[in-house]
Length: 438
Ligand code: GDP
Ligand code: MG
Image (cartoon, rainbow, N blue to C red; front, side, top):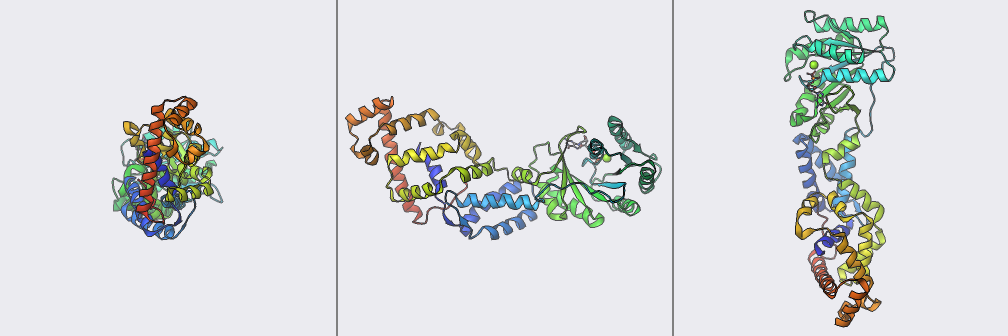
């Protein structure tokens, strides 16, 4: 029991201002989380520096730990970095709107071309697809199959005519036929390749696209920065689409690409099927990249459920070890308002590992028993547990439907806890401990 409460009490103690040490502690965790999510290390470095500057010296509200305050900022800052809000496709003043696909081979350009066509079609548009990849065997066929699935026309001149010419004629055909969107699929590159880069630049000059979408495989990780940088320098991208987010990648590429290009991420592709395309939501991506379980919702819960004044008072009592069974009960009530305990543990990073540990078994029944015992005590007993002699113990056990052994155990735990608190506050000094993430 005491381990459990130690955690919760630890969480209650943050107050005053966020110190540099707090920031350094928390940012160590954040840095790891970002690197684990495969965010480019340079991007991580810049980001950490920025958040450190913002967080140091901030007021820590009652019932928050400094770590919580910092993670909250990190989350908001990440969301903001990835664009804040969801961005739509650009639309030309005068149709057709021309969309040019760019990206490495295998990133998912051709697949995305089909997906976008389906999406546009569902919004009552009439897209035309242009097969601009004449190099990869079966690339034209792949696009034709996709178009066939959704009855969207695919323009091709085979693989003997230059992609620039194909793109030009495709756009002209759209004008003639009254297609309001043209999506030009292009050849992939295995890596940044001067010749192919020149070709897509030529296509760009020839058709002057309204939207240039960089298609990035979310699993690319660290490499994403270089890819995005080269394409952006050559092409002036207008948007990014992340693909393969259905895999188990944490999607750090999103942050890297956004940081380098400044372009909004417009869509997330989440599967091989033609309807697996979603609008990109920066806030959801931020939590995914952070990967801190549901630490963020824990922060929200703390925000709404913890009574700030009570927490402050409790803290004072803990520090002076002037802590009674009434406080104990109230503390429990506060904690329970936040939800079932094992669910709470799930939300704290690292804590879910403890669940398998037999010494750390969350037992709601045990807690109910503890409450029953405390409630069977008289006022005087709660205030001064020292007076609880054997006959009082027998009475309390009977009143709470437990045994004298149960009562003994609880009294012992309570004593241990008080001792621990005294040590704890002595150790940490009057200003309270640092809010740790662990
Ligand atoms: P391109 O070379 O850029 O045109 O890439 P393709 O569109 O041909 O896609 C390469 C491979 O990735 C194909 O096998 C696609 O089915 C697959 N793919 C594309 N997008 C996704 C996605 O969002 N999720 C998954 N799991 N696979 C995808
Ligand atoms: Mg392709």
